Amino acid sequence: MSNKYDVTQYDRPSVSVDVLLFTIEEGELKILLIKRNEEPFLGTWALPGGFVRIEESLDDAAKRELFEESGVKNIYLEQLFTFGAPKRDPRTRVITVTYMALAGKSEWKLSSSGDAQDAAFFKVDGLPKLAFDHAEIVKYGLERLRNKLGYTNIVLGLLPGAFTLTELQKVYEIILKTKIDKRNFRKKILSTGLISASGKKLEGIAHRPAMLYTFKNKKIVITD
Amino acid sequence: MSNKYDVTQYDRPSVSVDVLLFTIEEGELKILLIKRNEEPFLGTWALPGGFVRIEESLDDAAKRELFEESGVKNIYLEQLFTFGAPKRDPRTRVITVTYMALAGKSEWKLSSSGDAQDAAFFKVDGLPKLAFDHAEIVKYGLERLRNKLGYTNIVLGLLPGAFTLTELQKVYEIILKTKIDKRNFRKKILSTGLISASGKKLEGIAHRPAMLYTFKNKKIVITD
Image: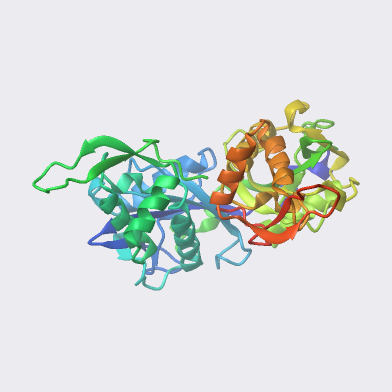
């Protein structure tokens, strides 16, 4: 290999991962944040994340950082977008590969260590000041999350295996932060082909028990 | 800042961009490749791309590399996915941020320079052996492209401003590599809400001239 093309001649940026973990709690859409335990932005809230190790895959780095900083594990994370504006980190050039997940909060217990001194869920409509460009990243993630409701099964993890259309509508309303007309919702969600009637009905005392539905695809697919 | 958290302590990967530029030519879906003019994989076909400069945004790097290696410019590129398997480059750890575009071929003239000795379009169903993990990246891009037909206006750049449903169907059939039933296609594409009737009809000698349609959104939006 000639020196002209020696890859080591190029200045290298640092590469990090950051995780957007959304959940619904008390009827509100929330996101997981950690309080930074290091400079820059010491004591400021931020997305859980950190530097990718040189022999580690991007997915593994995201899982590791999420667990180290918040105690959350066994979550299906999907790559969202890579942010690389030259000045987004005051230290040096840091390109960050972001990951997104939407999951039921009961699945984990928060505990922070490593570069984080605290971890907590915040309402997406009342976030504290965030480190770096994380406010912009959260805004982007929210937009993508809301768009994905229309054509993916991203809310799968927030619902029981079989659910009523009323339960599904409630989840959509919380994430979209808007009331939806019941008939319109039913028509639209059925036309997506994402869910199907289970044939079973909600057990209980109702005179006309509601039909239970399931997602056709039992594995979350949020890429598309 | 304590040494413990000094960002410079971390080994840094190299970061590159790679571009998937799809077009339709002679009724076939094709992708732009360049022939490498450097090691490794000297003389092997690859996606146009290269290293991100330390003070350059990711988008700018993608546009610059595409132009340097193929002469193509003024294309709307959108970030696709970031590939970062630790051993994907034999030289060192290289994380690559990929970009995708679908455009009409008449818009440019190929000419290669820099790290490329040639540039040409290849049928996606008959690609030569590709450098690095580029075959895997092309496979991923094709899958995403095909899925995006269902809910985005990604084919906008391949059609005139107003088009018949027959013209649109032909483009879909080429990209999906399958015959589509005419009535099903019309019903499905209209139900997406992506296009609307222009009110004008195809001029010509036909007894029943076809209605012309337009995309409601005149700007390509392929993220979602």
